[in-house]
Image 1 (cartoon, rainbow, N blue to C red):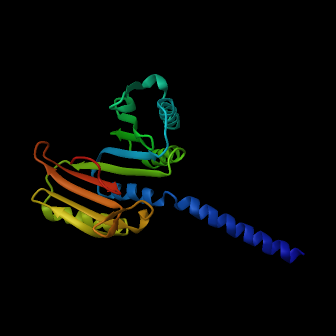
Image 2 (image 1 turned 45 degrees about the vertical axis):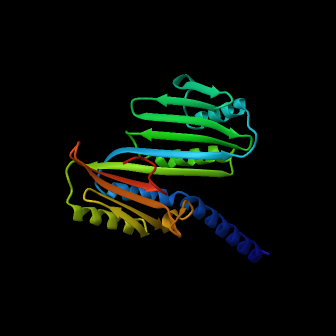
Image 3 (image 1 turned 135 degrees about the horizontal axis):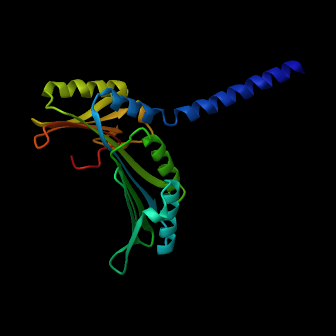
Length: 244
């Protein structure tokens, strides 16, 4: 009997270990994503999260508002700090919220395109702190999945070097990022001042798109800005959804 209890205890501990392991690795890819950005030695410029959730039922304007309020609460925003707006007629149906502070901008838009196609779109831009990006991503993902089965989230961190880097330095940075992210380059676009590559990272395998018959979940762009005399870097998953 004692042996049975010992064996049972062993299996319980093993199962707990498995669950803890899974819990610890949920965001490990994004933690590595942040670490990889930090290793570039670029000065942080901003991070951007763009998310949208598809709602495939006949939703009302008030229901869209309730979802927006729920997301606001989940993100820890005060309703007194936001501005509401809406356009709701035969041509256009949308509800929108904007919250702006000195360091952060958040917009939430609910768009009804038809009786079975509506979207909740969230756009967050923060130019002060990027260490909380994993927490914000997790909150946003959970919020949208309460109402949608199809959720798309793109995350981008941008940094800058206060000088013009030599073009061969671009590839050194890119190769280091690919190595740190356990990623394989899929495609590359470049000109005299810019390089952009798409890649597939084993650390971000759940968040991917199909591109040229391949999976991609990592997008890196480096370009020189003559106006600012700075070299800018963008690291995104799965793709950069900003004009750069």
